[in-house]
Length: 148
Image (cartoon, rainbow, N blue to C red; front, side, top):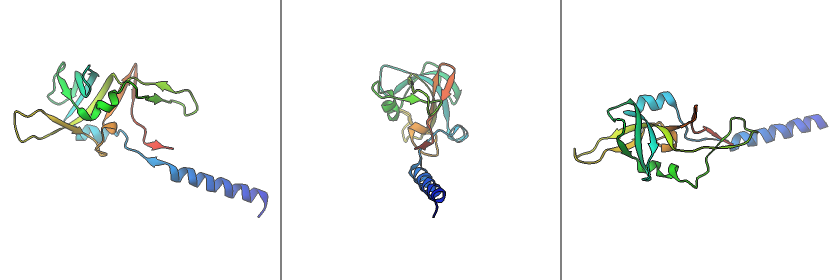
């Protein structure tokens, strides 16, 4: 085996290793989430973890100003959590606030009319991280599907 063939083989093995270590993570799928959602709302954080104030309603019977309680999203409100965005994989990371979100929600049917509405993620992945997008200035951002 000559030197160039050895280098080509080494490069191939490295690229297979990188591809094998990549994993598809739960990520936002707009069409799927919109189709599954009973409610799509733009919200702002409140002082109560897991509770959001509805700003705009895009789908469903919720009203602007109404509060929705979604305990599964409380972890995304953690002020110590570092969420960064990279437009360019080699560029600098930008901190991302989580104060404005668009939530894609599905109402879970309750046995009792008096019970509080329970919300579940409107997503194929059935995870909260894949059922919302961030609104940051003039940008809409979502979770990434690949983790290298």
